[in-house]
Image: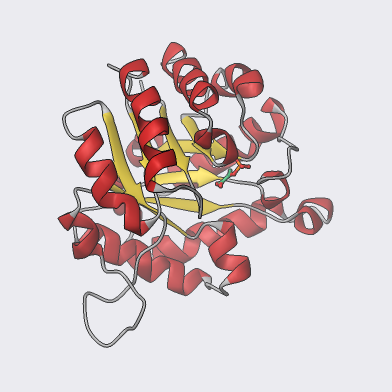
Length: 250
Ligand code: PEP
């Protein structure tokens, strides 16, 4: 049986004071429940200081595909490791749409993360126009294939996939449990055609306006193995409720 894992994506939110309050609230409430917070780079040291020894792990939201060198403004995988990160989000739709990250660049970030021992949370998902024109599976396939071609299907044993329909991110519009389950099942069957064992163990998170009020029915779906949570991960009670809903369906 796969574990369910909830990860919070704080995006570009927070301050030392706000983070201290949020972490102080979630840490005791999630004792014994595996959860992840992906915080902005400057707050990794704070996450490490507060969360070390707890069941909450932490990670980043992006990384460079290069190990070191003249890449002003970039952050390498080994720098993330210095701050105790276990996870890093790659290919978030905001990185793809606002910063022009291509499937190939996302794949090389995935490779760089794994080469350093980090677990990439690989985001895939279609836009509204793509869904309405019936190419959801083709888009998700293309995004996955870029990584599988670059890294090999076996590497998914050390990765998480997050299905995040772009039209549901930050919009308040959640995919129905049936819509989400259908794409999760598609992803798993696509991987199973290459390697059934990898597919069976693969954690596939759902992301897109997950809240305390809709988490239970999403987490109850057989191929939804947790969530990648944006806005609601900044509200302690919401994040705690989502993590508990996921843990209940393990
Ligand atoms: C996200 O940031 O990955 C996300 C899913 O955001 P939200 O939960 O706010 O839709």
